[in-house]
Image 1 (cartoon, one colour):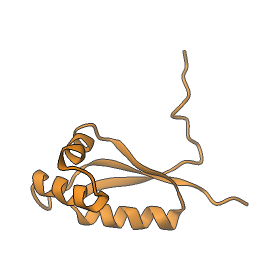
Image 2 (cartoon, helix red, strand yellow):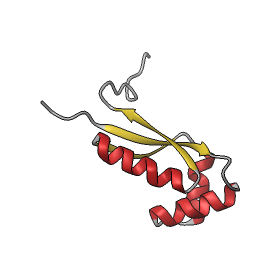
Image 3 (cartoon, helix red, strand yellow):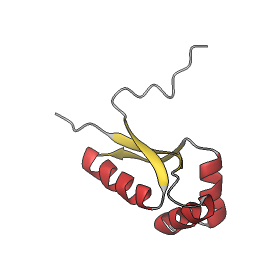
Image 4 (spheres, rainbow, N blue to C red):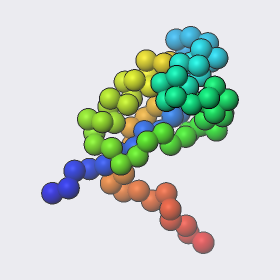
Length: 86
C-alpha cells in the first residue's frame, strides 16, 4: 500500500519574536530573499512543500516553527484543491 502524502502550509507568525526576525530566519532556512519570505507571509496561507511522508512533513514543521513561523501539516489523501463547482 502506498504511503500517504502530506504538504506543509505556512499560516503566519507566532508571537515568539518580531515579524521581521521571523521573516529573516525563514528566508535563511529556505535560502530565499527576505523580500520573497515577506511576500510568502503576506499571502499566507502559502504552500511550502508537498508530496512528503509524515516523517518528512514533521521535520519541515519543526524547522519552520524554530524560525517563529506557524505552519500546518495537511494530508493530500483527499486533495480537492483543483476542483471547481462551475
